[in-house]
Image (cartoon, rainbow, N blue to C red; front, side):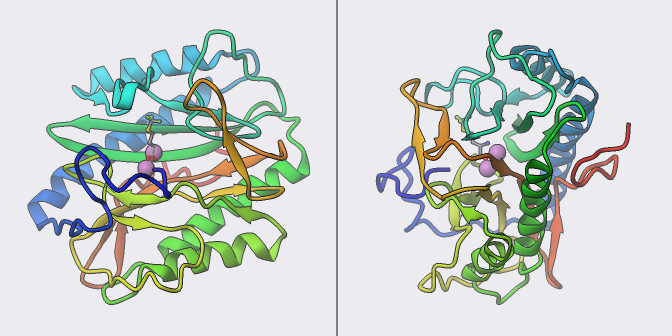
Length: 278
Ligand code: MF3
Ligand code: CO
Ligand code: CO
């Protein structure tokens, strides 16, 4: 979600809006959709091979969503034309699937899916390595980005301040010389696709809102191998690194529990970061 956005997004002011608190029944309903959303990322894994087009992957994702009885939250969202976002190499996020985009051995790719079912949104994304020729630097970026996301999630517990998430993420990224994209943030999710609170992936010392049990939000850091700057292409969606360095992202939907947190989009197959078991 865009960080430096106009104050009103779909008629909702995310900064002013109170973060919704969901009850135990809500969380169980949301967990089901999140688990299906995560299953889609599990199932797409074996189709990510050199030569496949990102359109073919999107078609499979659309079919899986239909089989689950849901729809893609992204399809038609502010005019977005696809059921997933597929972002390859220096594409940071919001890559549009296309029949002309063939994955090549050595590419790194993020697939981001948000399943909407029964009025609940389950949002998650993962990185995949295409073939076996990915550079050491690419693997390190993917690895670090996963570790950064998990370090952010590890901060989630009642009473913690939102800024602790971004601080933990940036500490992991900066330790190895990578940078954190600032233009896009995590977001409340549940009955709405993009809700309060906003989750920054870098340290914002003024962001002192406290986490409460029943809050649900995504943690979805974008980490660049080079500089943090990004720009949007003329298609109005695709975001790339300004210096054309590689970029990676992972995303989970997380609930604050009485004792800490629970990752609602945890992989049913136990997949975490690549290489995934075949
Ligand atoms: N799923 C993305 C997120 O993590 C949002 C994609 S919006 C789209 O918030 F329009 F680009 F698809
Ligand atoms: Co999201
Ligand atoms: Co997403």
